[in-house]
Length: 138
Image (cartoon, rainbow, N blue to C red):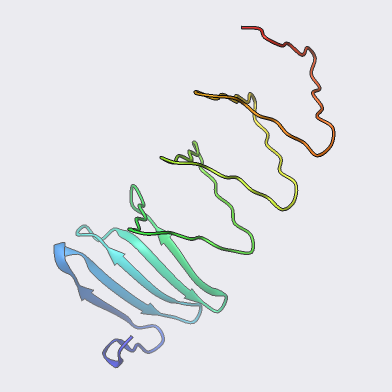
């Protein structure tokens, strides 16, 4: 930030933006805070700058990240959680690759090929364990 936005501890600064939105800067003992507020004063984006690093919070109805080219998310440990659901879709191929083990778990799992084969290959045994193993049944 330029020197015109420099704040003393405990101070707050507001900058008016287009569409009756505003940008708020606050500096206190625990963190520096940057907030984008809508025309009603509701916070839509917060950036908390702490000793541990920045924390981004989005408060709107929907968050959309869009890139004309590639988009990469990289972290030591990455978690995605949808409270109601999670959907991964692509208009092309999808590769799920793990250098370690991969486990899937659900109440019911469906594997369906809409055109072509379902291929299973293993370097070792292929095991199927179920109460009843049914083959070619509709």
